[in-house]
Image 1: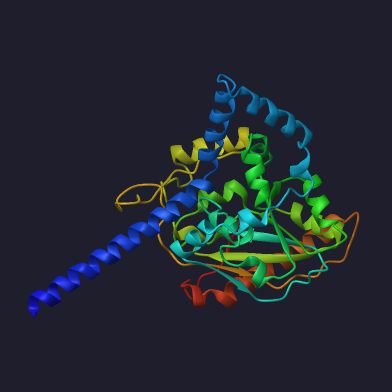
Image 2: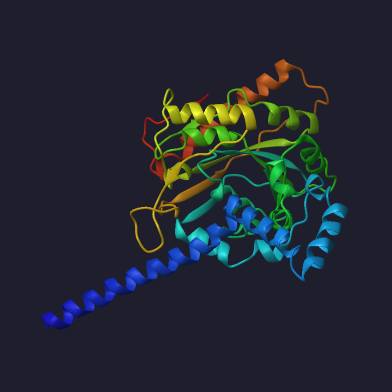
Length: 343
């Protein structure tokens, strides 16, 4: 009896181990579809490589299409329900797991501008929640079309540009924002990761430091278009990667600061675990992630807002974001005395 019970326990542990590995492999494939640098390199290699083969015509035809379609990232993109509903996004959601929480309804006849916090090492959670149906966005917010802003340079990568547009990513500039926020039919939610890549430098487990105090461009946009502001906070965003130590004053932080000043880009160094071993790799750790969508902040349309009006709305936004954090931190394992830190 003892041997049978012992064998059953071993089989159960083995099944759990294999189940975990399969889940990790599925998630790993989905992460490859999100990791920007990896996909961009592949797209460029294939696009250029085809020019030196008998299939060169495909690159030429795509180049013509690219030229004709070049303005699309600044005109709301081109979403595909098929790609947004890929089953692989559910694998990503289940891996952590990720959940999407609604605190108020969004009116499908209106447009909204959302601020997403924090940036984290990578913006995988914002992508999963807002650019896919992994967490059932269209069911949570029926009638709302979600768009997420991304750096312009990624829309100059062949084929990759079409892929990211198909899931709702659009170019991060005023022209693109104006096109979406001024849509007369309504039902648009335009999200901006406010802290940007600079906030990624502060991303580490247990950190709640946001780059927001001097980020006011999105406030001015909301005033100019008269759209409500929606604060979004993702608990657990900073807990899934371990960042290489880069405290202020270190040589690494100095290098990253200089790189940001000259290129507006950053290289956040991090490490996690692999698919079949848990000592080192690029697979994020399994940590529950809860993305909370706050109540809309009503905004009066002002075509030419003064600095005072911008500052006043900005202060209100920060207060509402802090209130959102306080209301949900207890349910998401944040310390009782924890507050958001703004810089």
